[in-house]
Image 1: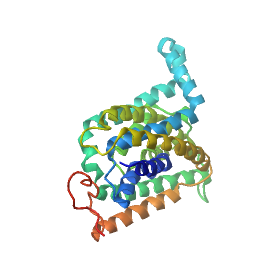
Image 2: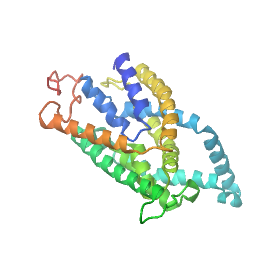
Image 3: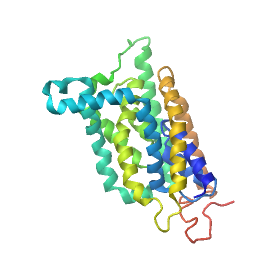
Image 4: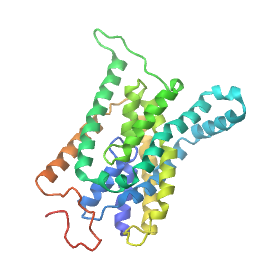
Length: 302
């Protein structure tokens, strides 16, 4: 991997991690577009540490309160009723599904799940589901001729059941094209939470999973036979951190008053274009898998 590749991929990671459009899919598609080798699941996981560092800094006050309250709850029974302490426990509960499935499906995540046909379908399907969830949230907020405005839930009303549902939705993002934020925000909207509440818990819930995944994959960087090296990976991670911080600040303001529909249409269009390119033979489903591995035949035609 060249320094230029790491620059571009770091920018893509930072731009797409917090938007409901799938950063892992966009890293894969960027490599295909430039005729680069697939950066792989390990590179994706490690660069996500950069964007999660942006989350930690952006939500540092919330996280400090949650961590402090959680530790107090270990010894003080009364402290367990505090909203911040409950949030700490619910983040742990919500992280269980992705931890279990991530280890169970590791081989599929690094192989079959990166098929471009699967990515394209996931982009379209979750885009449609997110659109439906967004319309339901808008209907509750605006009411209508025969409907009263319905108050949506805040994070203070988060339950263990809802935390697990969020966690299951997050686990779907193990497949590129789903989107961690997209899946969890969609789940939150269907559960009746406000857009801001769904996004905030989504970002907090991602911290343990992403940091653990990145740490687990650290040993895969620079392995013999891998085109991914430490220098470019660290560079991409730093770029992802800077861009990601700007994006998360913008996104939290955006969703307080705006719809998710632009992201819905974007997902559908990108997925449809990708399927068309595959259908007409312009792009092979496994494009980039064998570039740089000794196979001189490119899997991207033209």
